[in-house]
Image 1 (cartoon, rainbow, N blue to C red):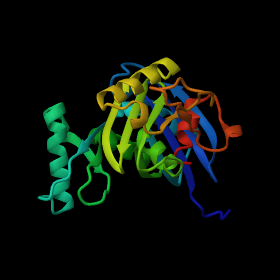
Image 2 (image 1 turned 120 degrees about the vertical axis):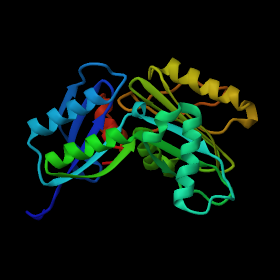
Image 3 (image 1 turned 180 degrees about the vertical axis):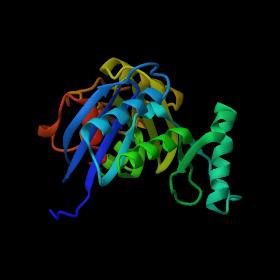
Image 4 (image 1 turned 135 degrees about the vertical axis):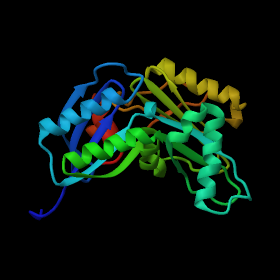
Length: 270
């Protein structure tokens, strides 16, 4: 390794704990520290303070920082296709109107990202508070790091596991500590995205998947393949959902699986 190469650091931020890791390439990481978040877990301030403490105590410098955010800190929705949209700015404005209809004026202060899709197909949009992104940029700059990406865990896990999904039809759940997020695609189109506070137990995840199936009339021959990614949990069998046995998906080799969900969440971008 060149003496001039820049270190790559990964931070995993959840409402209850923040972890800092160093990327070693080829999907490997070294844990540098992990601290519990103090205060109200409903907001992100305590988590940002925990990251600041980790960056200071670990003495990191001259490198790049990538952040995996618990989906607790993101909002998701589908954006219907519109022939009237003619530019990226118009698309963002259109997506923001949808968020404001659901969440009110507070959504005006959120940063949005909208997935690229083929013409005529719905898009998936994610929103993160701009104030949180600003704080993360400030923390990175103070530590001498370049913040190169901030991704909700749902999207990081989906992008990493996409080659193992049946792309046209699937029901995909990401069960991180305290939150379960579900993506449904049919005939190559996004049908729904839902993220809820929930336990990551087998029963809780199965209940959310069953509810999603009932909302969209999925049962029997209409059931798509079901996938579950649960960081930090053993890769055992999951309870069938309307007769479909979920396939457990781990990131990395099964032998590399750990009981540490925060380390496993970092592997989504390692």
